[in-house]
Length: 295
Image (cartoon, rainbow, N blue to C red; front, side):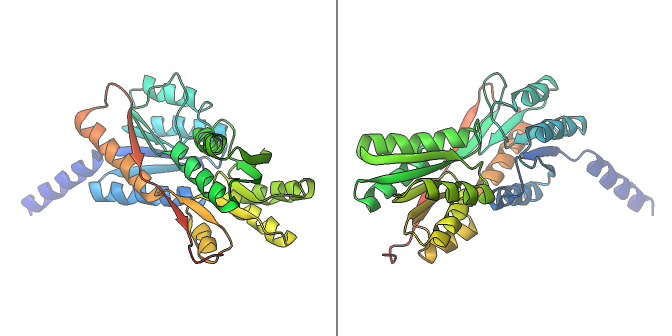
């Protein structure tokens, strides 16, 4: 009996010293980030780590409060998927001051804060791949609409950069006739696209910085009866299904589960060996998802 009691006490002690990491997600109202969280949770379970997850619901102030709460709860490493790359800087600096190493995932953190790892897809390359596809399908010319993500987010800047730089260098006869933000949101993508359709009588293609906006735009386009190529970014299940059905032209496939898993693996590395002296950039592969059977 004494041996059993001692063993049980040791198990309790081991649980008390479980290593804990925090994950502050920009929003769980987007299936991409739900999959990212699930990938992080699966890896945390595999590694025997406790993962505390918060949902900022696309609110900067909520995310700042969430990060402060995670620091108070004693997380040993903090993974941040920023709602706004620059606005989150003070919260990351607070984590730095508290001695909590920070990992940025999918979206970067602005200047002034220390980040141990930045784990993301190559958004510039993804934007360029979308630009190449649009250029090829349109034969090098035509009016195009760009639906941008949340202003101030690194993914918005980088996806737009890759798309526009490719077109400028390779397809100068393609014209961006409208460029508006829809904040990575499907409902806003629908509303913004409805307004653009009213204002622009000629549109050959739409590039949206994520699939949620692309799917909203697609809904508006299909309701209008117009034939417009739609390209998204993220390869969410709904978007891939739309590509398979020849409703969308393409989507740039990220691997959100791998992003989450890589972030947790990096956290484990920090717990084992300490944080690197300088930011380590980790690129996760991406590819363009198309359907060659579509006309």
